[in-house]
Image 1 (cartoon, helix red, strand yellow):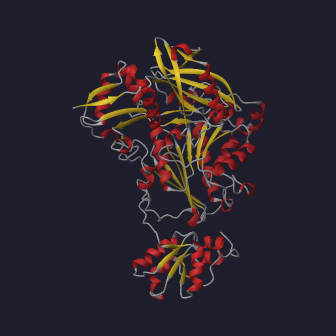
Image 2 (image 1 turned 30 degrees about the horizontal axis):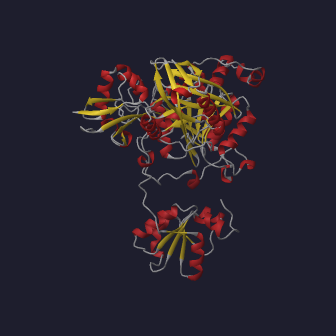
Image 3 (image 1 turned 90 degrees about the vertical axis):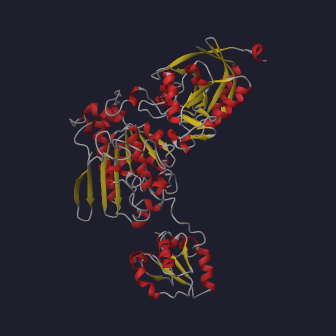
Length: 486
Length: 147
């Protein structure tokens, strides 16, 4: 059965100048295959060397983009109109060409100035680095995803080492609570975008480094375009959707992903480079359920720890660029700060890995929020109360019971007078202490654990329960300024 | 092939590059192919959709392309090229430009140095996608033809 395929102007010369063709096929993939079979010169403009549809080629069935349908498996029927619509992209991104196209480490060698020779003298006299290695560093382009705890030491050491271009993806603003570990930023830059703060600090440390800022969240839409331009990616993200996104994009683009993560007193690091070893999905095929693993904001982190793990990331990045030593590919390093102990696990490539295995099912970035179950969180409409509302209601109704579900050591930092401390972990066993007839408001630090407490109470039959939105932090900001924030 | 622009097109592209500096400006060029000459008739300035890194990237999304194509086709014109600016960079295509280029279209690039439009050049992707070849730009006033 034939359907009509509309050809955009730039491709018409490849199909005999025609603007529309009748092509046979049951789905979009078959149509395109037949089309490029009949018009072979069209093929490289639609498909990349690996057989995937180029990112800037959009195929619409009637008025819908096949990326929102079933991609190439999108069925077509007689009477449908298939349109190939260009999106047009480009840009400068600096001195490019052959340099960028080549993967690490071989590149056109840049020249070092006298200032740079002096600055890098301790590298230059190191046989494994030397002048050639230093030039490789200067030609290298490293992308840091996140300018936070891990990104800070990584950025500083990479800049100091003379990595020529450092791209940074971050959209956050420097907050005072960052300064305990994010040494890229300072007291004077609190309140400014992390990118600006980072660029200023890097420039001060080494003005020879070019900083390419990406003030955005890394998303399925922009990840390939951003990462494509770099040689190595250092992942310093603090959340699972972005971590899987970075992994998948690096696998799809054949880039090494220098991974690090931290929690409280423990950290881990590895180099995921699907060409030569396993990827993050081979290690963790699925993320933990949302809420199971607390973030640094919820769980806390020892300030020096990201300094150690982020430095390992910088070290591995530099080794990859120089091509020296044994990279951390196929190995996972676990660090325990309390015992000061490093352990090493061997990682195997998973032949059934959905992104880097023999028969990959993920061939383009997916919806990572959904994959990590984040969109599936229940809605808490009406179950939350603001700090100001709580203050008013509590004044009118002294019987209202406020439960603080934080840990005792947090209670010691700051607490709301009159609230009863029952840590979240103990709550299920202490339900008997609560009077089911009273109005209850749960609170924690920022309002996330208190929602879990609310679920526990509702499930146990308590009906008049709400959670304090923003936690004690919102209370300190909006109601009781005498409380310290933490 | 040579790209034929008249002085209004040239100054409009330069002004658009200056106005959007330090972001990249972009737009489409409507016209017609006549033998080995591509005659520009109408410019379609567009909004750069790359809000995340507009200083060194531009994007014309498929919807904008489709609308511009429909509009030009009603006037009997085709999209013959794309223009964009390179803020503080020379008007030479980057590897990113090449990777994302469409064949046969003229890629007009204007360098904008510290807010002032500088050199303008036009490039065409080779059919094997390997290189971008420079294409000459001819300045002609064609009032009689297109009025």
